[in-house]
Each structure stands twice: as C-alpha cells, then as structure tokens.
Image 1 (cartoon, one colour):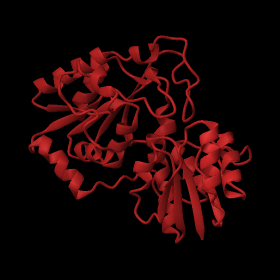
Image 2 (tube, one colour):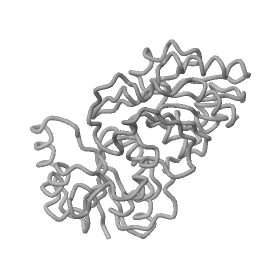
Image 3 (tube, helix red, strand yellow):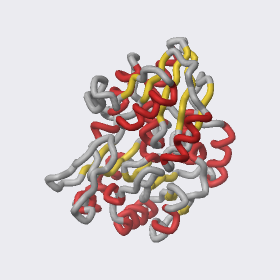
Image 4 (cartoon, helix red, strand yellow):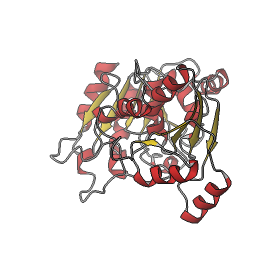
Length: 312
C-alpha cells in the first residue's frame, strides 16, 4: 500500500511519531512522508522510508495555497496525519483529494492515550512494541562528535530550547543562572560539560560555564555527542528526546509540560514544577501563561543536583 504520512511540526513531536512511521514501513507499506522544515531532519533518516517531501509550512496562507496547487498528492492509497490540527486535516483533504486519517478529525481524536507516541500509533492504525524514538546516527556524525570529546567523560546540558518554527515557550526553561550552578558542580566532579542547542540559544546560554556548541552542530552531530555522554540534562525540548533515542540517561525538567504525555514511562528521570497549575498543557500549541515562569522557578537547584548525583 502506498501511504502518505504527514508530520510537519516539530522536531521533538516528530521524534515521538517515529515508532508509528517505522511500524507502517515494517508492515510492508511504501511510505512517503510529508514534512515541514523542523520535522524533515527526523523523517529523512528513518530506515526504509521511500521519500520525504517538504512543505513550506508554517507560512502565509497564499504561499501555502500556491505550493499546494503545484504539489497535489493524489496517488496514495492512504493518507495519515500525525497531528491534532483541524486546519491541517482540512488542508490535507484539499492537497490529496481524498480522505485523511487525522488526529485533527473529531472522530479520530488526539490526546486519548499517553504518551503521545501511543496516540500516533493508534492514529496510524499500527501496534508499536516500543515508543522509543528512532534517530539513527551516522558514523560521520560520530567522527565529528569525537573531535570535541577526546574520549574523556563528559555531560551534555541543554539549558535553552523551547523554540521552533511555530512558537517559542520560554516558560519551559529553567533559569540560566541555575544551569550555571549545575555546570560548575559537574566540572568540580571531574566532568567536562558541553552545551547544546540552536543558534538562537548560543548567546542566551553563554553565561553557563562549559563548551558552548549551540548552533555549531547539526541535529545528527548533536545526537552523536549526546550518545557518548555519561548523562544528559536539559529542559523539555528536542535534545531531551534525542537523549532517549540514543539511550543516554536523561534528566529532564518540566514546568508547563506533562512528562507522561511526552515520554515513555521510565525513559527519563523527570523533575517537575511544584506550583498548583503545573502542568498546564501536553502535546499542543501552548495556551500562554500569566505567571513569570513560576513553575520552572519552583524547581530549586538542590533537587536537580541531588538527582544528578544519584544518576552519576
């Protein structure tokens, strides 16, 4: 069967969708993926994927309409949208000219099962033996990572994140000053500390003592660096999902997001905010916050240091 799987947003969300796509491929289907800029780096490296198309979304309505008219997709037996947007579901019906199985369809729904990977498998109509995200790392990417590490023990921190092409959620970030304390503590224990993230994170996390590689590594090279680390610690963001994918012990901090909605049970060590309104959302567009990052600020440094001590 020729199947079009659609996941246009975002990097971490797409990693959670990889078990569903892999199960479709394993069932003998010829799977083509339709991605956006943030999901493309994940889908393009999935073993057995037939091809990956890239849409310009998110973009202006005019640009999306023009692209859609020039790239109609009418030759698929089945179209599966691994997302929750009703607007995206309607767009795909226009793009493909057929029925679309989508989490944005009120009958199909989204958010029924946790973690999100379980819902993606349900929407795709497949049984997934594991919800572990898939992100194969190449030998070339490992070579790049080794140029920095020199075979010494190290820890990877991701103090930034929470930014993608659709939105920026600073409420997901633990205060940088506290990450700085964590980094100093780890270095006193004899670990080298690497900082990862996007280019926009580079200046924002510069006050954290460590080797700042934010914006210098591709997603694959970042995964390779994390794969060789003693452990990973960071905010709930793309690098945290990569740590799970490459089997590196991960400590992840949560404020507005719900760890049970985003990560398979026992795949990470989680520390959550203690304010009454936390968590306030799961795998959807952030509704906004009237506080001042109170949920993340409620996580004190001692809790994080104690958790890291136990993992080390």
